[in-house]
Amino acid sequence: MSQNTTLLDQKLTIRQIRVITALVTGASIEEAADQVKVNRASVHRWLRKPDFRDALDLARKDAIRLAFSKLDQAVSEAADKLISLTKSSVESISLRACELILRFAREHVEIGDLLVRIDAIEKRINSPQ
Image 1 (cartoon, one colour):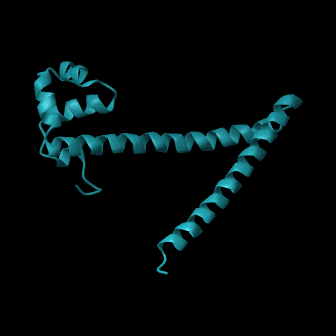
Image 2 (tube, one colour):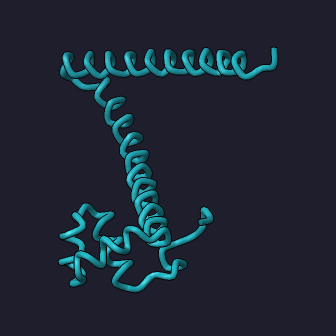
Image 3 (cartoon, helix red, strand yellow):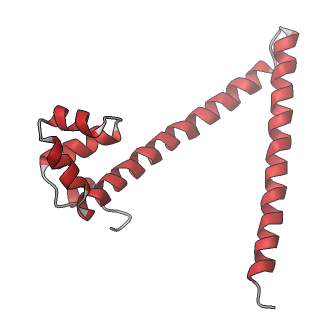
């Protein structure tokens, strides 16, 4: 299945697409079957079919991408809020915000250093000797 494939590109029935939507939004197999008014055995049978499973996997990946996109925005908003709290007139709030910013900066640098070290180790392991 290509990266640009959507659920509508799949050879699925409307009921199958509705079941996939229900499953992706947190319904159990039984709940999805009940919501869409299909037999539970049908859903279990569909789940054994590669095309249906591929479409379900695609829908789950799309849902995860959307969630991470929302989190990316929230991270930016949280950073702005934390920065604004450094100017709080309440000293304990200002100090705590500064402490968090410094801790996050240190952790960011440490993770960057670890990634460089891991990359160097992987290059050593994978290089012909």
